[in-house]
Length: 314
Image (cartoon, rainbow, N blue to C red; front, side, top):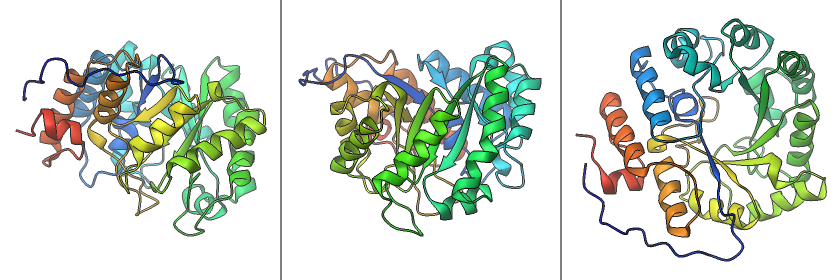
């Protein structure tokens, strides 16, 4: 790995930005779910451990989805068992009550559900209509909360849908507030196909505020399809968002939306935050080393600009 020049990036604070943010690492789940090859459990476990050791405060480990739909994550129970007691504190995605059952059996503490802001994607991804998805999630969230679990909610296609086009702000707010009303503690706003722009981000955060949902309950999940993820992140920071989803090395996509490319790279986000003097607690060099190692395991270079600048796939 190339040594980083001391003092770079230079820190220059910008007015009106948060002093600290939380990076919600989704690489092991959202990053690996779209891989063509099956990544061995031992490699996945090492990936998770390295990310935790790099200081990432939240690392989403896997998803208890049916293996027919996402075969790359069919080993979810095996992975969580391999991670041992430390894995109990890591969030996992559960699409329904069956997935929740598996998480409960393993004594996990944090789960997430995954909804849609559009009718078409709800049908394709969940086999439910827009309205039916909330009825499906209701018992899952209720049981998880009764068991003392924290529940996060994702809502996808918030800035555009490959089948429906532009998605009205009020439609996204409706979907998001209904998920929060079920009992989710946080809502992750997903730019699933990466079509968001900075002004759109500002407008959507404002629309949620008008509906009574503050920035303390929102997270942003950007994809970099059109190279806008960092610009959108800066816009969200200006709007007061303090939780951002990111994927080590920029891994990821969505198996149900072929136009979705990689997530915002954790390293690219950390580099920008360092330059802005915003605290995050993550060791950039350690994450770069981890992504460089994983790129070698996957047999291709990382799409992250910072990983390309600071390291190599060997």
